[in-house]
Image (cartoon, rainbow, N blue to C red):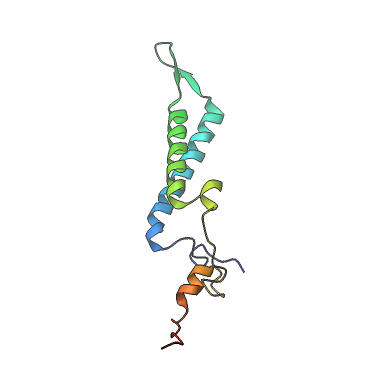
Length: 112
């Protein structure tokens, strides 16, 4: 069974709009990349000048947007290093000694 990002606690409702923007940027990148592949990176204007194809400029902007939103979503090898994946079937603090210690009930001092 595949678990969703929400079930793995990698994303929450507050991230959905940001994820939607990330997906839109990917679609923009794919559409522009297809246009650049078929039409080329440059074109000749009506006056005979060579110019950068607008789809290439839009593709490059989409790449920047994907990188920026990816950072905010924690996507990328450098960002994943700090993520903690939690198995909802297990204790959330399993393997986190500090969190387990903080949950312990305080001991009464035996000398009192």
